[in-house]
Image (cartoon, rainbow over all chains, first blue to last red; front, side, top):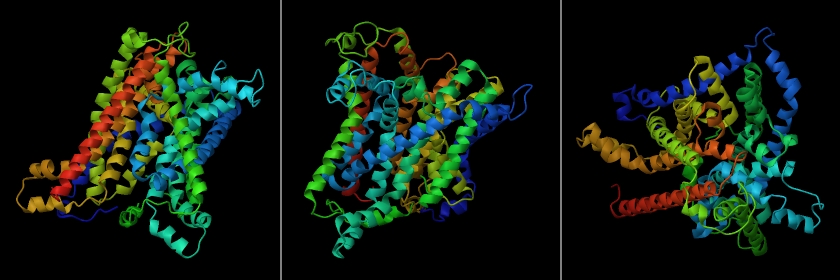
Length: 281
Length: 288
């Protein structure tokens, strides 16, 4: 950060604290405190040991948790496979269309997330052209369908969070000093090698940020599983939502929510260690 | 992020870093990128197309025949209109508050070196690395604990909470590395503090704030999961759409979604033009 000690700072040492106070207080009261209440709620079962919620979370719903992580991991990998090349094209090959293409990438944000997922329901419909085409090509059996399958759910998850993968990768590619690759080629490095040795390593922070921005929301999402899948594809988000809003088993629901958060936090820290970047923002 | 400075110095050659060779590979890459864009766009085409559908029955999921009915009567369903109004109200209030709160944090982080700045940076990132279902449910457990009635207020509180981070990070990214000595120059020349803020600080950070505000508004209008936990009996536009899968899914939903898209595009176009004009003015009179 380019924060240099300025004259105004010396004039009023309290100034930065006054500036951050309202927003930070809001985050403390409505983000940090709720996490603590969530922990408290998870331990507040009546007439049962304190760990009862957690025990049930793992024994009864561990499968949903595992499935959520599997689907999200898969969606993240597909999003890298689709998003990296597009980010690369935008960063290096789009010329004066760069801003236009970036605009196209964020365009989906301007139509409601839910309505877009419903649109996938229309596209993948049994009577729709996609299913007919795949059946004609014998990729699907005559009774084969796309809706209510694992593929539909993973496709939906990938779709919903793909822009969050493309944009960070684009940002990290855009930052690469072109002279580095020119130097590599002047030294008779083949294009493929220049990519593997120069471009790819320098773009890893973007891949890292994009993976987090895809994996984390995907693992808690239940809209895609609910709209595009069957009960066989149900994810942990549905369970948490049901337990909180329909069943009202708060200790169990809070335990599930807390475990989800804990696993993700541990995963993020481990991932940051492996990729060697902890600079998220 | 220190890499920004390096990028700025780089000459903006419009050539792929992998040289002139491999035209065919380049072509394949472009085609692949195009297909990915198509994938991103397919549902949007479908949404627009199906706003012109005359569905058989109550659910607009299968194409029947072309019709302008829904466009002629977009406000046919009162609950849908009410939901849209509520969403716009929530988005307006939460955007206003979150944009002020977030911009102040960004300003503090970029302008001052102070103890705890790193911690604040972490506090801003954490809501983004927490699944929405956890954010929503933990807020719900707080409201249950306090015995608050869920409704309009709790929705707005939730929306401000998740927007503050986005605003602060967006504004910070946009204003990092600005030359804040301009402010001191103004002060040294005898400008009173309020005048410095109005004439120097605000014009410098305005584009970042506008971008962050638009992002915050779009996020609020779009949010489903967090809202579901904290809405009580209130129904926002996304909540209405979700409920519609059970009762009826009229093409009016598509009409409204298409309208939101068109209005956003217009707003985006206007801001881009505005910023280009500012840029031109700045080039004509450097430092203005």
